Length: 75
Image (tube, rainbow, N blue to C red):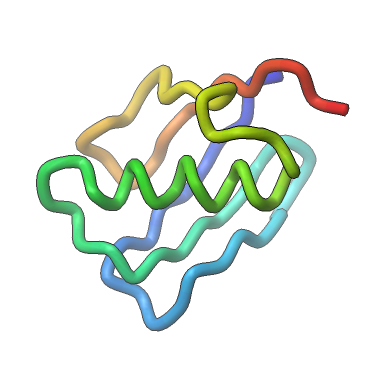
């Protein structure tokens, strides 16, 4: 499954919000330094979908706010 994520690093809380089908907004308290925000987003998506974080892969947008992730084996 491919999902589109609008990232909000340096936020007030950690949260995942579904905006449309396969579109999400993810806010994290982590700063966008050395991939910390991306790792936090992967962890939050794993919690949201109830799957391990290693099944989530960032495909596009490592240095952008608009990102594309691939999620494997959704149940």
